Image (cartoon, rainbow, N blue to C red; front, side):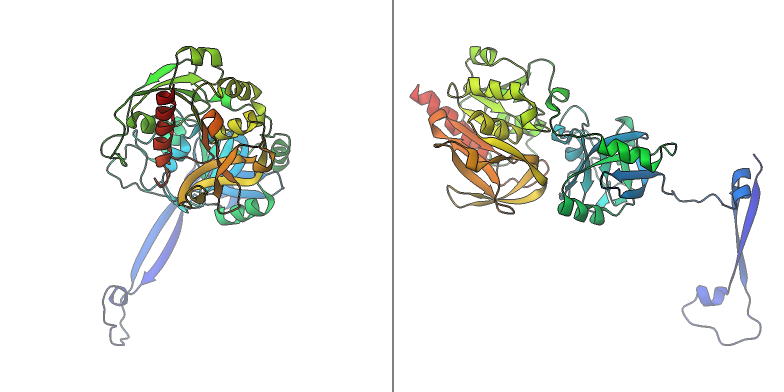
Length: 431
């Protein structure tokens, strides 16, 4: 490889640049010449381009509406298709990365500065990253946190997750709010034309796909870990009695399990396809239907499982579990325009009028008008009035569309776990 040098000279008067007081006029001004050399490759010499000491745009995000967004890549390389959603959380990007509910989606962070705290092994919400990719405005060039073990870029590269930065996330967010969630393709492969990537985005759809089967566990296991004492909260007045809970893993987050364990539950986690008869055979005090990714109408087997358990034991549904309960009770679900993703969504508890700031992550919702008589809407989202919680006292049912464990997010809704404990306790006493 032939190397040439391209010289730049800058004449500087040191007395002007490096002193506070300007010098008196003089005909004998001394100048310092600063010279820098940039190496040129033979290819660069032929094209007249020099190597740059900064990263240049080497990736594209192509949306199904035809817009093409040039960006810089970090993490893994390649080409990936997914649904683009925006998340308004200010912190907690590692919990978002490991939330199984983001399977099949590119998560665009509206907070512009990401990566400054690096990553650690304590904030994982599942066994791996399930999202399709990460889209951010500015990637931190350094990390500063006492728990940091590696950079965000290295973390994503090791897990084969693509990321892009230096893209106008505000403009993309406005587009998603106006037009709704869009399918997109991330690519670092220059051999693929824009037309090919656009066709990929228009030929793939997330609706009707069973994403739960790709994130659930393979076999039952026992969960014992509680919230660590350094991070625990709402610990006063907890019931010392132990309750046996079977948790269906539709993409469950670790902190849901930790909160249940902290409230005195002995938990068995089972796969999404675990038969209801096997669950009832162990005589649990309650059953949890967890959060999970995708379209609830794409998993009719899960709805049937919920139906078989209803009325047998108290049940608690979170996010996907809430939607499955809605369908099992006779209601319908629908796809929202751009969903709810973030840690700052206000929700009103209609029973006591209390407003909670909640953490949410879902693209589907239960249609309250489709619910049968007797099913109570307990919570509503104050941003759009959508159904955020259900209860059916005749069958000992409670559910929330959002995440009471947060992670990341505020802890306003942690009392829902206490309510579930109370439901199991009262049912147990009445038996």
